[in-house]
Length: 198
Length: 166
Image 1 (cartoon, rainbow over the protein chains, first blue to last red):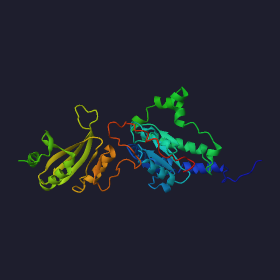
Image 2 (cartoon, one colour):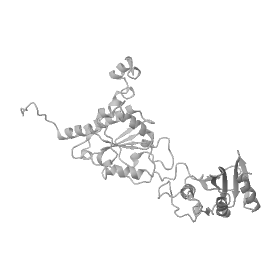
Image 3 (cartoon, rainbow over the protein chains, first blue to last red):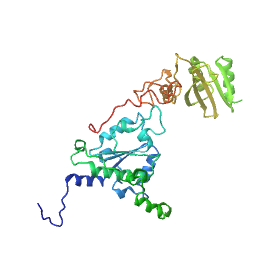
Image 4 (cartoon, rainbow over the protein chains, first blue to last red):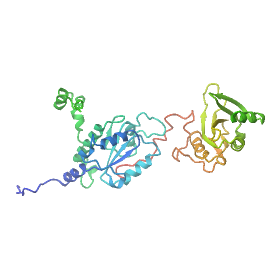
């Protein structure tokens, strides 16, 4: 059944609209406990400019945040603090585990360091590196935006629906995943290269 | 004569000194645990060592040539004469208890708590002997040499927050 729509009317799903709004206005909670926090600050600063992805509004109260970026090692005594801050954040909320220490304990395989925060709080995105470069954090936020688009629902019922996670863009473009370098990788390699031109 | 030499001489005459040594001009005096508080009080009143810089501990388990298990280290400073002196006390299990110096030096409070936390040495007469660094629920003393580096599973047994309940 065809319906005539005026020019200024767009039809979409409510989930899509809500996810579109959410993914472009992520407010991060900087839970920075170590050197990854320095990279996190660099990501927010002018050179890398997290504002381009709508996630520049770092708030130091969990009540105003919907994205927790855990940057740095978390010890046993800090974990209850982390969990409390996570519980104080309003739904919908997401968590990025930034860096090797946060994701797995890293080199700190000692009695007091938690070996991966995902054992004790839910984590949506992991960033490798020690510490990761700002580009990696930005990539994680882009991947999280893709995830929000593909998975989240307006009423928070995504766990019941069970939509599959989308493959990550960065991984699809890597030659080790596809077997062949993609066209964009080749053009970047044959060109003069972005990094050298600064 | 420097004050530290006077301290050593006087303490030797009084029979308090078990051993003494020098390293790069610094004097270290080993005394018995039971005389620690008495000597510390004399350090403060007679010789003017008004600052207790540090209280720390060494575990000599498996240490070559060591006869005692734990060695407490007290580092004193006389801010007037700018001279430093180290007192050492050796302890062995099961009597891991020594007099607290908090009545003499306020700065001993947190440092003794740290030694208690990490080595399990109790300080008699300490006003508030609780753990200071590790969580309250921790049961071990991890800087002891017989404690494994990766712990005894404390780091894995913590409450979990799931997506559903948060």
